[in-house]
Image (cartoon, rainbow, N blue to C red; front, side, top):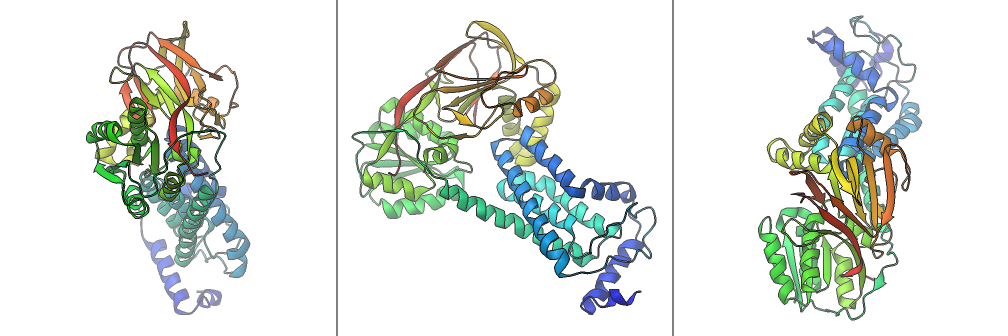
Amino acid sequence: MADQELTWSGALGWWDRRLFDAVARRHWPGADRVLPRLGRAANHGVLWGGAAAAIAIFGSAGARKAAVRGVASLALASATINTVGKWSVRRPRPLLEGVPLTRQLSTQPQTTSFPSGHSASAFAFATGVALASPGWGAVLAPVAASVAFSRVYTGVHYPSDVLVGASLGVAAGFVVRRLARDAREARVVPGDERTAAGAPALPDGAGLTVVVNTGSGTAAAAGLDVLRTRLPAAEVIECEGPELPAALAKAASRATVLGVCGGDGTINAAATAALRAGVPLAVFPGGTLNHFAMDLGLPGTEATCQALVDGHAVRVGVGRFSPGPDGESGYFLNNFSIGAYPELLGHRLRWAPRIGGGPAALLAAWRVLRAQRPVRLRLAGRPRSVWLLFAGNGTYHGTGPTPRRRDNLGEGLLDLRLVHGGGRPGPRLLAAAFTGPLSRSPVHVATRLRSLRIADIPAGTPLAYDGEHAEAPSALVLDGLPHALTVYRPR
C-alpha cells in the first residue's frame, strides 16, 4: 500500500482502504455490466438531465417543479465541488491494485479524489426532486445510490469520498429548497385586477365562515393556527373528501364571506359555491402548489387575514364550462383540459393509493404514451384531432402546451393551446413544449379568445379542471367571465 494512502487522517485512511479493498475482492453478480455503464451515464450530469427532461414531459405540474429543483440542486453541488472541494483537499485517486480489470474505466479521471462529484450530483438531484415530490424522489433514490456506489466499485473513489460527496449533495438540495421558498415569498406582486368596492372589513373575523380541507395535510393545519389567532370570531368548519362540496355550499348560503383553506381543487369548489351564492371568497393557501393563490399574490394565511382586516378585495376572472359534471356550469380558476393530461391524471389518481404518487405517475405516463389515441372532436364547428386541448383562465407566460404562471387574473380571457393529433403523443407533446407561447406550428396552436364551443366529444372522454377529474359531456362551451369573483387580497 502506498504511503500517500496512509496519510489520509490516519485511521480514516486505513478504514477507507480496507473498505475499498473489500468491495474490490467481492463478487457482485451482474454488477460488472450495470455499474460501470451507470457511472459513465452520469458523466457531466447527462443521466440527471435526461431524468429531468422525462419528468418535465410526462409528469404533473408539481413534478415539473421538482425537476427544476433537482437541476438547480445539481448545479449548486457541482459548482461547490469543482471550485472549492476538489482544490481544498487534494487527495490522490486510489491505486487500482485488486480492482478487477473488467470493472475499471477505460479512461481514468485526472482530477483529485475528494469529494466525489458524481455522488454529490446524484444525491443533489435526487434530494432536490424528493423535497418537492416525494414520490419521484423515491424512484430516483436507488439510482442515485447506485451511481455513488459505482464510484467505489470501479476504483475511482474511496468510500469517504462518496459519503462526503453524497452529504454535500443532500445539503445542496436543502439550500435550493430554502432559496426557492424565499424567492416564492418575495415574488408576490399583485397584478392589475380591479378593486372590489364594498368588500366588508372583518377585523376579528365575525361573519367569516372558513371551510378547511383536513386532507390537505400540514400546510392547512399550520394555516388554521394562524387563522384562529388573527380572526378569533371566524367560524371554522373542518371536513374532507365527499363532505366538502355540501359543506361549502351550506357555508356560502349563510356567511358574509366564505373562506376556504386547502389546495387548488378545494379552492375551485369554494369558488363555485361563492359564485352561486354571490358572496366574496377568502383564500387561505393550504395545498402543495397553490397556483391560484400564488398568481393572485397570496403567499400564506397571514396575507389573507390582513386583507380581511383591511376590507380589501379584487375582482378576478373565472373560466366556465357548460354543462359541468353536475349538470350546472362548472368553473375553473387555473385551467381546463381534454386529451392526454386528463387521461394521465385519471390513471395516476387510480393507482397512487396502491403504489404511491411517483410510481403511479410513471405508470400513468407509460400507459398514456403507449395506448392513448388523439381525441376527435369539433372545435368552433370545425373537425379536429388533438392530443391535448388546454384552456387557461387568463394569459399564461411560458412556452409549451401547459404553461404555469399568470400576471393578471382579471381579464377573463381563455389562453387556448392545442397539440394536434397525428404521429405519437410523446414526440408531439415534446415538440409543442419547445414552441412559442402564442405560436402556430404543425404540432401546436396557441391563441386567446373569449369563448369556444366544443362538440362531438366521444363518449367516455375525460376532462380535467384545476386538478379535478370528470367525464366530459358530448358537447360543451368554454368561456371566460371577466371580474366575476370577488377575492380578498392585501393592498
